Amino acid sequence: MRVTEQGQVTIPEELRARFGLDCGVEVEITATEDGILIRKGASIEQRLDELTGVLKGFDIPGVAPNDVDAYIEEIRGR
Image 1 (cartoon, one colour):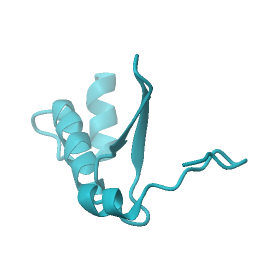
Image 2: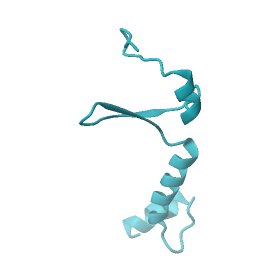
Image 3: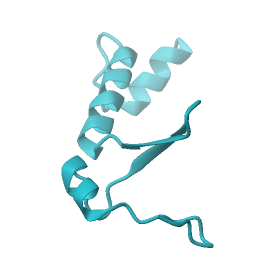
């Protein structure tokens, strides 16, 4: 396997099929002591679930989650 001038490599078809690396799937590349680790990235659904979990920590009692004006007024103490 060779690296192209643009820094690209071709992952063999058998490995793409085995690990679900379809066209458009994002991968994470990590440097390790032994070399480079290529890992399938999180799906959009997983990322949205993580983001939703983070945003739940910003709930304010008595303020609807989509009421931005009320949220701003509440955090400003008005």
